[in-house]
Image 1: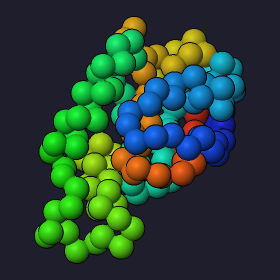
Image 2: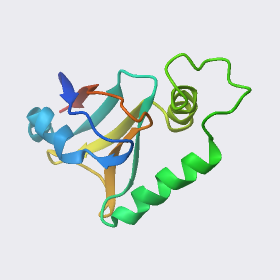
Image 3: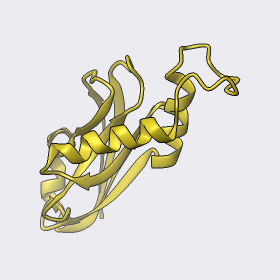
Length: 140
């Protein structure tokens, strides 16, 4: 069994849902050495998240942003945690809903994503800054 790991810094992005699949595979090129295995991607932040979904039509990502903003509203007077602005607590809730990691099978040196699947960085803050991810792949 081989195990590879890399910490990668992602550039700052605006609030929204962003495809980062190529950044994952570029960030850990040793994935190509594995015939079968798993790849886990973990984000080291509490106000951004990761998910897998549609990789072709950008309106899907826009609809995700719209739905999350309607569902988890800013400026709710019941929030106690608001030191960093009105998008802070909603960002934590959105990140908790989506999660901080995704796991993808590796098959013949490639992520075994479906035809229409891509990995999203879900940026929930207006100014979240650069984000760090840990990419770990293991297998044979």
